[in-house]
Image 1 (cartoon, rainbow, N blue to C red):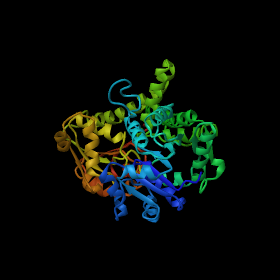
Image 2 (image 1 turned 30 degrees about the vertical axis):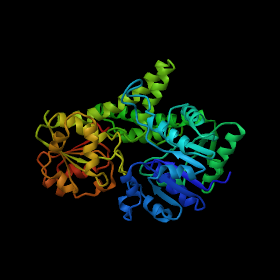
Image 3 (image 1 turned 90 degrees about the horizontal axis):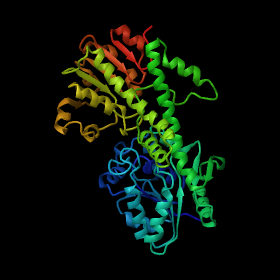
Length: 466
């Protein structure tokens, strides 16, 4: 099957970069990314590439090369669906906040809305590709909607989960560890799988393109994120033991990471993991296990989330305890709000919960992040519904200058591992802080000896007192 037109529904962190790379590598295919959010589409079409709605190193150059040639961003969803032979669904699948499965199950209302719109508009046969992270057997629900509400059109459903790490999404797309494609084992299903294989084969070696049945593909995504998150929570659990015993978690991580059976990746202790996938996917996995009566399995994976929440809570508790058991009226400077460096994504960021905990103690927080805008920070806090929006704005201020952020602060909390933080003039920062001046390095990126020589009281996750 020769694909000439692709439509992607959803212009977010996955849909935008993925389609940009496909368009760059497949100039013979027209790629249209659609979204009902007018402001988001306008941002993707902005002449100023620094204002793209998604920040990823290298993404601006790819968009510049392909946009207007064969890459288009539009709000005309129906037209893009009608013209496409292949449709990617890349909309949000948040954790449910209501009804059965509240707090654990994935909310599939946006997926269903996409399926119904595809069914209503389509007049020719389509390949529909699940790009969003979905629970096992979602494809059967999508197919049921398409087959029963369509216009006598034949649909093939494929699962093509993303394995992108924010901050390295472009390199992950250009040189992926693997591309996973799941489809039916029928002749029609195999034909559809081969069509998608043919697209990726324009730049991905064939031995890195794996094909499975749909269910294995869907479950593989959840399992990968669960395993990665489990490693983070495991090393964070050890970081607390290190602090009590005088060990250094970085030395422990290096020692065990050199074991070829374990490997060194995802063994960086921190204030906790965040992002759009880890927590959501593990809770989804917990819900699936519980729905099958696998309580022990569910309890095991739920502990990963419990450990992650504990790490964030103990970080904020340590700030309060170290500052003489009160932060009321004290200024705490936050360096970083994004859940990790090289992205403007704040979903499930540890900074949100740490800030909320400290605001409960009546702290005054000042925040600087090089890529996260002020509106996003306040929106993250308001979403928790802990206090009114007015109270959040009264207690927390967002600054565009890191030195102003730290001016007259009692303590600094490093919540994101942006490279620039390590290169600041820390003597200048120290001179303008309240004394004693505290630094709580939640990412372990600063030079402890340098800061202590200047006069800071320095705390790092996972480093015990010798």
